[in-house]
Amino acid sequence: MQLADLEMAEIEIHDPDFVNDPHAIYSVAREENWVARFPMGYIVLDQQAMRDFLTDDRCRTPIRDISNMVGVEKGTPFQRFYDHFFLALDGEAHKRLRRISAPAFTAKEAAKYRPFMKGTINKIIDSLDGAAECDFTKVAARYPITVMCDILGVSTDDIERFEEWVIVLSDAFSLNDETVAKLNWALAHLFDYADELVDARRKRNETKDDLLQTLVDLATDGERLSDEELRVLLINLISAGYDTTKNQLILMMKVLLDHPEEWSKVADDPGRVKKVVDESLRFYNPISATFRVTNVDIKYRDTLIPKDTMLMLPLTYAGRDESFYDSPDAFNPDRDRNRIITFGRGIHICIGMFMARALLEEALAVMVERIKNPQLAGEAVFRHFSGMVGMEALPISFEPA
Image (tube, rainbow, N blue to C red; front, side, top):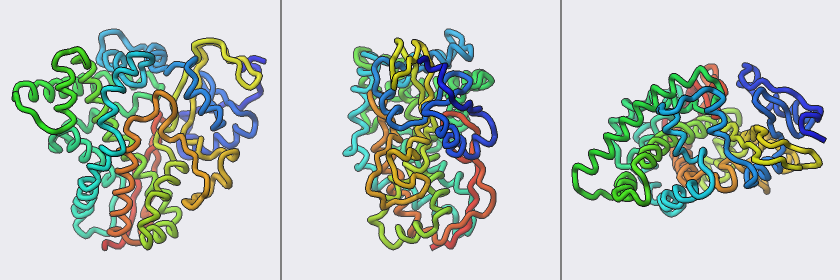
């Protein structure tokens, strides 16, 4: 049987009901079949199938396919970026860039920055100056990017300068051709900014002990890392440091507001921090979806999936699969089995996953000490679908410690 012949639901990913509660829409569609249709292809609604396609070398990442669909022109900043973007690359090109970058993002390297992470989140809470209310999205936005600036060796004064460009870049996966002009504008500025960072380091003729210096040194002779690869990698690191972990921190706060007993438990027992972080990554995932395209005809579950079929893999829904979890819609940090694919699988597994875990764990440990009895103090507003799950507003009230 052909994939197109299966009975399945259709999902409109830009519908407001989907944006506000994608899990509910996915769950209804899952009752009909393990796949659903969406305007550009098919959505996979089964965690095992997601795992299989993420690790199947007969599939490619569709970044260039999507950029062609929305009319990205050659020579534009958007096209330059995607020519060297991690997720747009496969084969030897991807292996080489990952091999060069990976040593800076091991669990051991992430652990080195935990004291700085703890100090940073404390300073951010200090800046609330005893206030008993805040929009938590604003608090979360300042935390991971400040840490990433320190790791790179970039001044935190630059955050105000590049923040608007990075916010635009977070919509790169929205599958909406209206964003292309904005993306070209933002990436043009980010390429100029990366040029300034690299040129300044080379002119100083001095060696610093930070990630930016390591990457600049790798590109000095042009043999291991080209100048263009260096700039795209810097943009990747800055944007990842701003958006993804920030979103997960906000989502973790949201689920704990909905389950105040868990906030109290982790406040009484700091040893629960890791469990709560892991469960939040299962319950909500900031990467709402990743995508694959079949390079050849693939027979899967007695169904023929034709060559060049677009598959959307909603990682945020993978944690709600009943075949993997008991009571998946219940938030339970004490669950025995917590197999998550939040960070993906296969060759494109998130290179920053250890850094992200460390950031979340250090933040939660400090927050439960300093923010007592947090409660929702207004409307929680989710972001529109953009490949990322996040919130535009999360007003909270609390008792400052």
